[in-house]
Image (tube, rainbow, N blue to C red; front, top):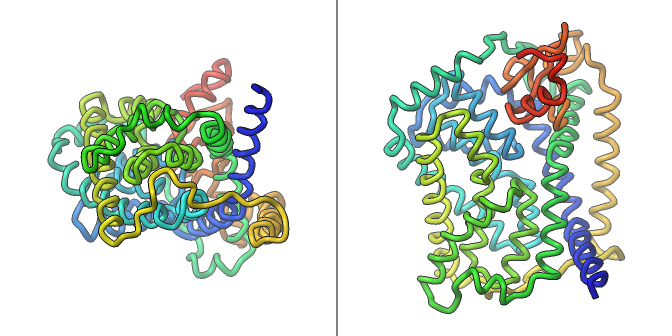
Length: 418
């Protein structure tokens, strides 16, 4: 019986992955291209204040800068330390994990188009709420003090100034950079993705519906919806699974009877897991972190509740607990064909990544290499804007976040100095 349950959970997780493989490759490939051709310096220059127009531009830049939650928080910190507005930096971080293409496609495939639409509609509401709330609950003097503390560790290296994106998009070197972002992002998120599908498979196959319904109130109209959207982020806080990895778990929660808004708020809450809260505390201090948590939780829950009632008002709300997207198996179907095409495309991207030459990266005219690879998570990092770096003998090692730098330093304590 136990072995049957284990096999069922593994199989459920595998077929969730099978259904979404082509979407993951497509999403990460598009994200890699955008990251290669839109520089971090351009992003930083656009985040100067928190006016509505700026926040709209910030949201777009975040949405095309797909990151795992750790890298997103580190990049937001780096941009803030270099002069970006605090509210704009936080919204950039939200958008880069919640409004990205690959997340929307995976949600569509595992939960249905209603949830995918809710992710982007609710994300826009959440960003608007944070634009109003954050400047009012976090005093300017606190963010000024936090910036001053962070700025002491910022390297003022010159940002690479090579050919424009219009020139680079026509070169193999430019697309090699794009493949580097694609492969490194997949490498960086491999644990979250695997953990999400494994946990989601077991939660779907082994956890009985009554367990979820004992946690989430049902059958009481508005009050059930309110309790669900407030409790959804709490599950995310204690689950430790972030980024795309929490979507399979969300699918299991939906089948367990959680409300539409509760599932949406759980997906939104990938940026308030416990490890990330400790990182925010290190970056900004305890006072800012506590208010940031309260503001994020409020915005995530309110946006999810508003989205649920908006979808309900147009009679598109699916019935609670239904498995609205059946999992497909290998065979004569479009998923198998798309997965085969995705595997070929991934092979081409990997070949570009493996055969690129460091000396010509990003230009094709012999410019110095502008990128490095984080040795811990594998993410491709732009050297001039690396959130963290350490000295290993005569070599500088670059990292996507302080989280990776600290792990590397602990493993190489005898050879590093910050």
